[in-house]
Image (cartoon, rainbow over all chains, first blue to last red; front, side, top):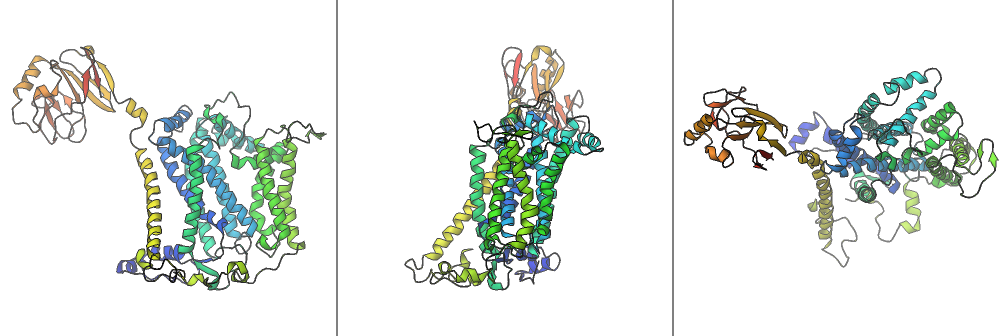
Length: 439
Length: 189
């Protein structure tokens, strides 16, 4: 893609194909000889893990669609039939439902890695925005998918989320009616959600193609955040990163398998094993874990429209991040102050997740009844959500722009190779100085 | 795979170490072990992904039916649905049974005696899978030259025992597995 191709067709057939459709040349240049910074750590293996998870979700999803019935009278029972009667249906459904969680887990690690090492900065803004588009599509897909089993959480989750759009003045009501295909979440809603749940993963796959394309133009960022300056800074993607990614994928799959085989329902909600009943809402309604932080932001605001706008704003903020960060230094390895705020931010996201999982009026520290402040107890999750949500936005809109202007970063190495080679521990006697020339 | 390492091992530790000469073998082992693990994983997942299309537990549970023969009168054929296909339950007349026995040793494409096609002492009840052995159409009773069934699709003709007599079908109409639960009740499948 970038640079000239080193592919040499070995047989007559390969030469014939190469002059008509250079497919093998493309594969060779993108996954075999692609020059990759030699210092990528294991945080860089999640792109490969995510590709695998997307493929697995599509395959298991196509299989589940062979057995699933998108009709309010049959949907719940068809899922039970998959679990009980379809050969290996339990395995395929557990792979799919837990696969969604693993997909989001990997995506979040991928995104936090990006924030820490400043990968979103020039010239990788488009790469980052495409990633944000994928994330939005993932949220949509996960939401539509969660509705399909037609349990109590499915149904009332769908009711709550579709009603969010009703918050918009004037057109809100028309939007929800249009979305439902009726006066409430019902059979037409289930049918269209099934259709969209089948469509979106293929759109994700398309955007992933663009994402990888946008990656291969500037090439990978790396833990130092310093640009690649010479061939000595890189190694071939194969075998160095195919093997490294392969190892990381294996470890990730072991964790995934533990959930699939031993804790298949640990990440789900028991209420979803009760068939949807439009007449009764479960006592405590929560989304899946990966959407809890946004749910907490939604509930932190005592105004319907503002809550919805802030929740969407939390994601919209990500899109403009490349222009909010004013620092010239990419990697937080050399930005100790930014690093501190980054870890506070990561912790805040986890706190928001906890807030989303609890009822707003629950006490954060049990047994301590804090003082009443404005409309709620100061020791309640609603106030913790507010403080955390505030920091979420402050981090992006205040801390990130100002830090770049006022902090003093540590000295940044001139090249990728210099910190590696100058570090006494990393140059044992007898080690080859230029491993890219091996193999 | 292996031939790329033998003789061209770039690992500086490979030569001069106490394990000299064994290194290519160890590398081969890792290559093969990794390959086998990958193939095992893919294969282990592939089978569930394929087997899920086979009949599910509830489909198999509905694969047998019971039928009360007292509902059929002499000379009548009742068609019931079994495993998604028609099942012919025919109360044969003495004339039809006679014709079937008479042709036991005729020039048959798929030789079978009439006795082998019904339960002992129950010659009047003929139970057949009602799909033509040619390409699966449903033959109609009363057509053809042999007093039995005629397939409208490609003209196969079956006699009063359901044996193929004419046309492109290769086999007699299939007799399903069934058993008499009582004098008038059968379980098919």
